[in-house]
Length: 175
View 1 (tube, rainbow, N blue to C red):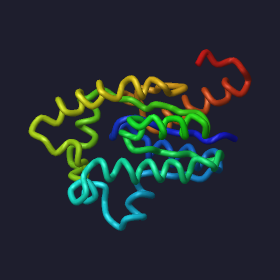
View 2 (view 1 turned 30 degrees about the vertical axis):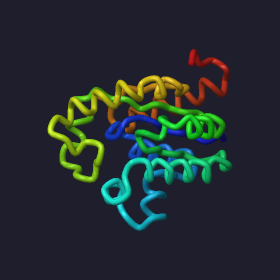
View 3 (view 1 turned 30 degrees about the horizontal axis):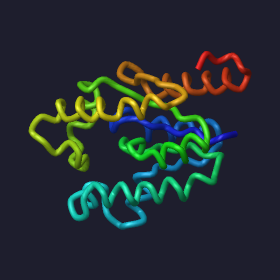
């Protein structure tokens, strides 16, 4: 089976859904942010604070390139991975790209107590989320499927992904 790549903003459920999907399908689960943290021995927040976003994005590009040859895994990506065209090309080549989305108010509620979110260390986090969502929308639109997780639980999202994959395999999916 080809890889399943989950893209989308922070707080949309990529890691939770990815783990569950990998478990059901018997595939390896990879979280690109976790790979970066393990490689440098610090959190994403610490990385941003000490080295800045460009440094982080470079590491992210390296991680995506390094995993792109394996085509049988479930991958949860960082929210901004799609900002780099090279990353998108690698991910699209790997398999099915699925965009997990959610409304800004839902995202804010889900990540409110998570201090390790460096891009949201601002006075008006909801406005920042809305701005980033708008900026990333064209890149997120490159996904093969979008699922709004605002009102869905993990199992519901996983079920929709599995149904889409089955329909795609049978040639009955509308895309």
